[in-house]
Structure formats: structure tokens, C-alpha cells
Image (tube, rainbow, N blue to C red):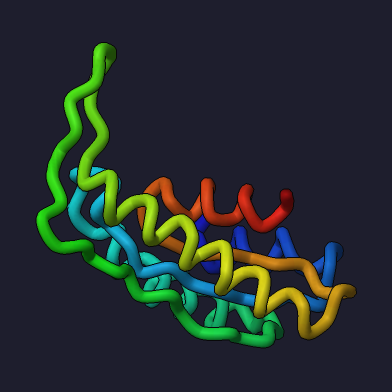
Amino acid sequence: MSLTRRLARSFSSGCNKISLMGAQVNKGQGKSGVLASPVVLRQCIKEAGIQVEDFGDFVQNVQENDEILKLDQGFARFYKTFLANTLGIANHVQQSLSKDSSRMGLLLGGDHSIGTGGFFTSL
């Protein structure tokens, strides 16, 4: 089953008031393609006929002199940019959802900072 059809089935019986937000961020991981995922997923949502209120994308804030931080167990890629994006995404989500509390938020993205940004919004 295509992604478009799965999206249509998922939203057909659920919440019909959706606030759509995107996060064009990719510095927190090494895979190509995640920067474009909000655009691709929006197209699938549109093709599925799902009605949303679109609040646009947060575009990543790349910090100067950023680096990979080596830790005792692993590393953090471009941690300054990741933190700036996490806070920016949290603000974007908070502003979007504050307009209508009855809507379900759907955040499309990007790298792992979409999860941490969304989490900080709930605190």
C-alpha cells in the first residue's frame, strides 16, 4: 500500500483538525534526504486529500564553528546547531498550536531535533 493511501486511511476516522508543521533540519544525523522530507510528506498528504492547516516550515539555523562533539559513549553531530534547532522547533510548534488548542499537531521533518523540539513544547 502506498504512503498516500496509508495516510488517507490513518486520518479518515481520526482527528480531522490537524495543524501541520515542518522542520527542514538535517545536521543532527548523517543520512541524505531528510532535509526534503517535509516537502515530500506534504505532497503525500495533499494527494491523500487530508485537510490541514499548514503553518509552514522551520528552516534550520546552522551555527558557525560547529563541530562533532566526542563523548565517552559515541558523539554528538553539530551539537550547537542541534540545540538551536531544537529550541527553534519548540517555538514553532508552540506558536502554531497556540492558535487552536482543539487541533492535533503533526510535525514533519528532518532529523532527531524534531522529536526533542516537540518534546520541549510539551513541558
